[in-house]
Structures are given as C-alpha cells and as structure tokens.
Image (cartoon, rainbow, N blue to C red; front, top):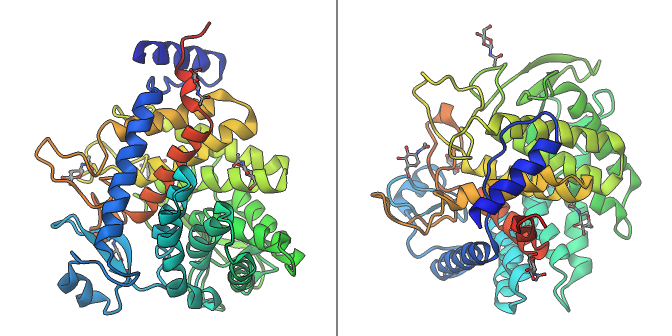
Amino acid sequence: MLVSCLVLLLLTQAAAAPPPQQLPRCLDEEQLAAVVEGALGQLQAVADQRQSPTTFSEWPRERAAASLPDSLFPNGTDPESGQWIGTKPSRWTSGYLAGCYWLAYGMTGDQRWADLAAAELPGLEPVAAETDNHKVSDIFDSSYGEALRAGVPGAPVEEYQRVMQTAAASLSARYNDKVGAVQSWYDIGDEFVVIMDSMAALKIMFEAAAMPGGEQRWADEALSHSRRVARELFRPGGGSYHGARFDADSGEVEWRGTFQGYADNSTWSRGQAWAVVGFTHAANITGEPDMLAAARRAADYFMRRLAEAEDGVPLWDFDVPPSAEQPWKDSSAAAIAASGLLRLGELSGEERYSGAGAALLASLAGGYLGWEAGQGRQPLAALLRNGTFNVAKGSHSTGLIWGDYYILDALAWATAHNLTSSCAPPS
Ligand SMILES: *[C@@H]1O[C@H](CO)[C@@H](O)[C@H](O)[C@H]1NC(C)=O
Ligand SMILES: *[C@@H]1O[C@H](CO)[C@@H](O)[C@H](O)[C@H]1NC(C)=O
Ligand SMILES: *[C@@H]1O[C@H](CO)[C@@H](O)[C@H](O)[C@H]1NC(C)=O
Ligand SMILES: *[C@@H]1O[C@H](CO)[C@@H](O)[C@H](O)[C@H]1NC(C)=O
Ligand SMILES: *[C@@H]1O[C@H](CO)[C@@H](O)[C@H](O)[C@H]1NC(C)=O
C-alpha cells in the first residue's frame, strides 16, 4: 500500500510544477481510521480530566497559578508533567477545546461530544465584546463558529449567531479605513500591527455578515484586510513576513519583520501555515480569484520548503540555519497546513494539494502523536507533541491546543472525503 501511495504521489508531483519531491506517504483507510480512533480516545481522556468546564483534575496548578490565577482553558502542555496548562478565557487559545469537541461530534454524531462542547461556551461568551486585540476571531471561530457548523438538532442557533456577531463587531471596531485592515495587536490607537495569524479565523466576519441582522461592512472589511495582507506580507518568492506595522494615518507600511520567527527576513512556519488555511477559507467564502491565488502562493511555498524536512514536519521557522541551537519542530504548523492543503485541494481541483495535506497527516501520525509512548517518551495530554509556541520566550516542544484542533479538522476532512482513495494504485 505504501508503495502504491508513493507511486501515485510521485506521478501527481511529476504533473505539477515546480516539482518538489513531495512527501511520498499517505495513510490508507485503516491507518487513518486508527489515528482517528486514537485521537478521539485521547480527547475523551482530556474530557474526563476536565471535571467541569472550569477545572482539570490533574492540573499543574502551582505553575499556572504563578502567572495566571484564573486559569481555565488549555493552551499548551506543561513541559514536565505533559498535562495541560490553562489560561484565562480571554487568551486567543481558549476556544479550541470546544472546537475539538465539536469536530469530534461531527466525526461521530455522538451527542456526548456536543454536550461537552456546549458546556464550554458560557465561559467564553463574555469575551466576544473585548476589543483589546484580534483574539476574538480565533476564540469564536473555533467555539461558536464550530457550534454553528456542527448543526446539532435543536441547538440555540440564534444565540450562537448573536455571539458571533458581537465578535465580528469587535473585530470591526479595530478596522482602519486608511490601512484597510483590522489591527491585530495593541490597543486601538497604539502601534498598528497586522500579523499573518490574523488570516486564521477572519472568516467569522464574512460569516457573521451573512447571518440575519449582519452588517455587510464586516464582510467588506474582511476582504479588504485579506487583500492588504496578501499584498504586504508575502515576499516575491512566496515566503511570508510574520507581520507589518502601518502608519494608521497614512496607511503606509512602516516596517515588515517577525515577532516569533527566526529573523525579520525568514519565514516562520506557522505564519505560512496560517496563510495557507486563511486564504483558502477566504477564497472559499468569497469566490475571489485573488484569494485563491494567495492561497496557492502560500501553499506552494510551504510545500517546497517542507520537502527539506526529512520527516515531513517543519521546523518552527523554514530558515533556521542548520547550525542554530534551536532545531525545534512545530507540529502545529504542520496540522494547520494539513487542514488548509486538504481544503485547497478540493477548492482548486488540484490533487497535489490534497496529496501534500495527506502526507502531512501521515508524517504527524508517524512520530508526533501524543498518546503514543516509546522512544523514552511518556504519553502527553495533547493529541500532538512537539508544538513550538514561541522560541524567543523559551516555549517549544509541547502540546498546543490549536495544533490539536487543526489536526482533528484535517482528520475529519480526510475521513469525510475518503481521501485515502488517492492511496489506491492508479488503474
Ligand atoms: C500558555 O499561556 C501562558 C499565559 O499566557 C503562556 O505564558 C504560556 O507560554 C502558554 N503556553 C503555551 C505552550 O502556549
Ligand atoms: C536574511 O538576511 C541576512 C542578513 O542580510 C542574510 O544573511 C540571510 O541569508 C537572509 N535570510 C534569508 C532567508 O533571506
Ligand atoms: C520534541 O519534543 C521533545 C519533548 O517532548 C524534545 O525533547 C525534543 O527535542 C523535540 N524534538 C524536536 C525535533 O523538536
Ligand atoms: C466551503 O464552505 C462551505 C460552507 O461553509 C463548506 O461546506 C465547504 O466544506 C468549504 N470548502 C472548503 C474547501 O473549505
Ligand atoms: C474510499 O475509497 C476506497 C478506495 O477507492 C474504496 O475502496 C472505499 O470503498 C471508499 N470508501 C468510502 C466510504 O467511500
């Protein structure tokens, strides 16, 4: 089976230009089902530990409490215990556990997952009105947005839509006409920074605009933002800057560079992955050719550089020199890109993208699953090991809740679209 996958992927690649030796691996139907089963079992273990939507039984409380007394929602695992560390609901990562539960519901139709997910929502709801940065996009896309996509019979759809619209209005409050973009970081009026991460979940502005009572300008602002990002954050070769600073009065770019990457002129893997998934969603929702072009550009670069990673999972930055003392992987970048590439494969009709997404899943399954011990490793509470949050802050090689969310999304997509059929020998 693996041999036939290899043949097919090589054939697919041969037809496409440029021809990177894309990862010659994919999961067959049985392997994919086994990974899904393992992932759901792992998520169930997290749910069992979370006794109520506000506590974990094995919580490394002392550590978490030192920095954040109101720890509630998982964002990364503790490097020593391997257990989730929680943060306050207003951190950008707080919606992803609910998102994991909704995706599990989507994969199984089991009401228990929907109940777990719904129980997470009230703790998040008050955050929708916060406008101190763009976090509400991630928080509400993964929680309430997934709730709507899950389509549970009898769900309070109007209530969900109301919260989504509050979040969209919060993002809109950060939009600046001169820049034509939503300010990512800092208070309104402070430095006007826009980061590639902003593409991840901007789709809630489009979605909220289309809901009853929604404002068209939310969608217009989201499209303008996406276009400005596409214009300013890519380099000619398709790699990306992490962010840019704009003059809020003139709208001019003042600076381009990095916050979490290796260097101002390097390509931070997760930023590139946010671009792949973000522009793919924007293209899907708007049908605009320039959004699809931006998605392809981001994806082509990601795939080309990924070919340098011998195990198929990228380092935290594509330009970390081999001599650097930071050879860390970022599995979350791989998971985000997998979700984006699988979707882009369908949207563009080009199998090389789905093939690359499938290869990423296979690579993650090959050595990054949190529940698989061995090689001196203990099981970890997360679905994925070796996420890198922020090397500059010394945070690497942990589980990351958004990595778990995106690998579940990719697994759900691969399963629902019978992606393994592309593993079949060419007839
Ligand atoms: C989790 O959040 C806390 C508080 O913001 C932060 O200090 C920590 O680095 C985060 N950990 C990870 C792995 O994201
Ligand atoms: C970034 O700039 C430095 C200094 O000019 C240069 O040595 C390095 O090769 C550049 N890296 C990339 C990825 O362009
Ligand atoms: C992966 O994570 C482990 C800790 O779980 C760490 O020891 C190892 O260095 C990491 N490897 C890479 C390549 O990031
Ligand atoms: C595009 O959006 C529709 C509606 O939300 C969704 O059903 C479909 O799966 C999306 N397609 C991609 C490629 O993400
Ligand atoms: C998925 O594709 C494989 C290979 O083409 C096929 O054997 C199988 O029946 C398909 N499964 C579903 C659920 O369509």
